[in-house]
Image 1 (tube, rainbow, N blue to C red):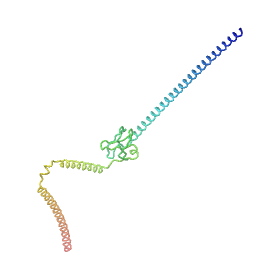
Image 2 (cartoon, rainbow, N blue to C red):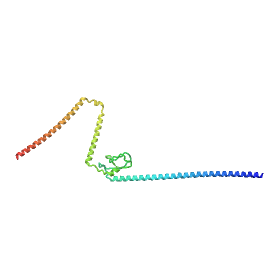
Image 3 (cartoon, rainbow, N blue to C red):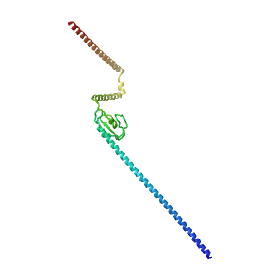
Length: 237
């Protein structure tokens, strides 16, 4: 009986020891899992912080590079503008030029005929005759002022073109008259006007012919006078 009791007690002790070992193993496994999760979170946090640092450094470097390029561009523009202003600042018609930095699209160069001058490029321009020159052309070509006779001819051509535009505007205005006023002109009047125009042209031709005949008569008179003078001189000799 004592042996049975002792065996039962030992069995209970063994079961308790097994349960305690299981509990310890489970607790250790739980702690290991928690430690692994904590380490993974720390690793992810470190990687995130490192990425943020790298991104901030990249943005800082890009901003510094952008600022450096902008500063170089501004310095280059100032240098170009200074070089341009050191040139003879007159257009081909001898008007004084003024320097400007393009802020809008649509500027062109009247030397190389370029129509796409980039925004921010320097130009020398004449507002009097609307003449512009880009930096490259003005440095490469020293445009001399035009001589006075060429300037006078250009002014004459401008006046002629202005008069032609005025005449064209007047013709267009006359062509817009009412149909009634055009119907009032009878065929008889149109024929008379045509006859008068023909008569005037004939008279002009007649006057031209008479003037030509007068010149011929004068030339013949001169020749006859010269011949008579020569004969008289020979007789006197």
